[in-house]
Image 1: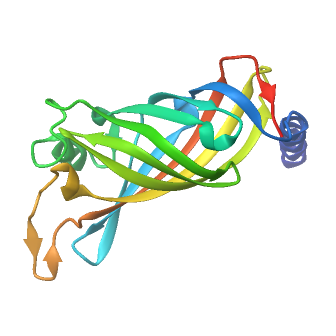
Image 2 (image 1 turned 90 degrees about the vertical axis):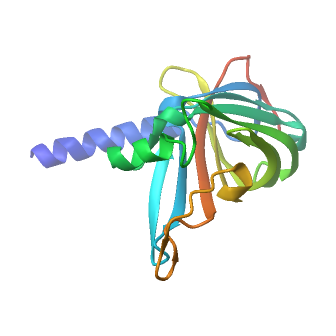
Length: 204
């Protein structure tokens, strides 16, 4: 009986969430919701495996325009929020061997150009890590628009990209018999929700 009640409660919540979904593109200014945003990374470890991690804090905004290619975004990520699930490793990543968090406390990501549509797009953005700013490319898509249970308009996006850590002066170079202890290529994936801060305007 308890299971049935819990199942019915879950279904009620699910349908009430879907009932608030806004079909179509909703332009406007959105603040990034840090509680529902994840910036994760994967990097090779000892050649044969991988280490996953994430940054638990982010502050940013995106401006959705019409057409979508005229949109823009920016984000600041505190290096101190890095989280691989192992404190000793996180402390090492914050050290001079990697991010030098004491000297360079944050990273910045700012869009330069967007091509495509909200369904499928490419972004060229400037990424600043430590004292280096370089262009990086992400592929992404909008995963939807919804009015939440507090009546606020939300938009959600996913983006993926790859960088070389050494391009940003992260040059840690310990080796094992098979090769580098830490690989150069870093895969990045971003999931983000934004909350509208201007009156939403429906597009297409």
